[in-house]
Image 1 (spheres, rainbow, N blue to C red):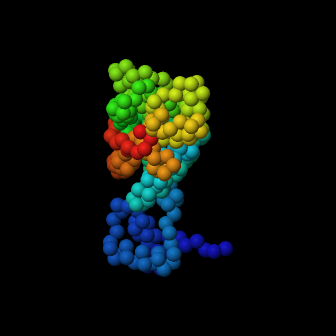
Image 2: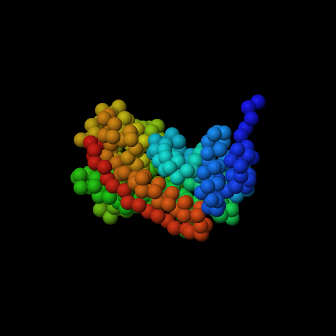
Image 3: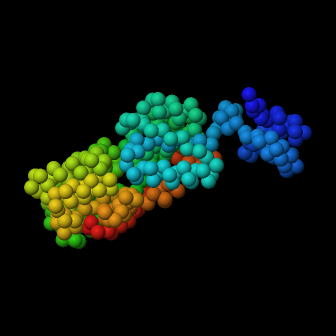
Length: 328
């Protein structure tokens, strides 16, 4: 069996104590430059790598960030995951991805995060009870709700300004002389879906534009089947606003199947600006979520809380922008 190089091996080769080796690899520990150089040289010669998990048992800290996500089938969230993993890697942190199977995070998901002694947690596309959230607070683990809000001001959240965004989408469609509209919602119990619906409906009600609402599930199939049903009713509107892009793409394909022209017969607008929205076969007009800025704000908060935990609670909303393409 191959011998695993230990800190004791490095200490012997470098001619220093094992505690000196430990101090070299602990952030903030005091050690002379001469000792540091000797330890690093010996470590390189032996191929030594510090055991991060073992170190976490001593310091009660890791360089692992827990990221909980449900909607992996929605292309928006893999884009978010990629940005987080890339950014944290540059900071020397790894991401522990937890795919929850339910709308609300389950006890076993929380247990996984706590067992790995994560330095911080990001919750996206999933709900969490206040009791579960308190488990992280009691362990002084910074927690951020990303693209989500709880019905409380007790936790930190980072979102797109969904209310203002959907108002602007409605105003843009009205400026295109749209006579009647349909809104296709996502999961009705999420803050993002509720706010997008509220802002859109607010403008339509103020202006008296005829409108209808249909409930779907944030999936391509949901958008496709909902749009087929609308057309089969014989009541195709002059514009459809879907609460996310993947539903909007389903809407486009359903309208094409029914031989309706886009945008001449029906205009279509989505929300998120996923990569697929720009594909030649779609060219979807959509509201772009400012993912880079949202990720940046989330990481800034987590790193600050890791350095000095305060439990700061704040709802951060960031403006996006309308991306005009061929569907509207």
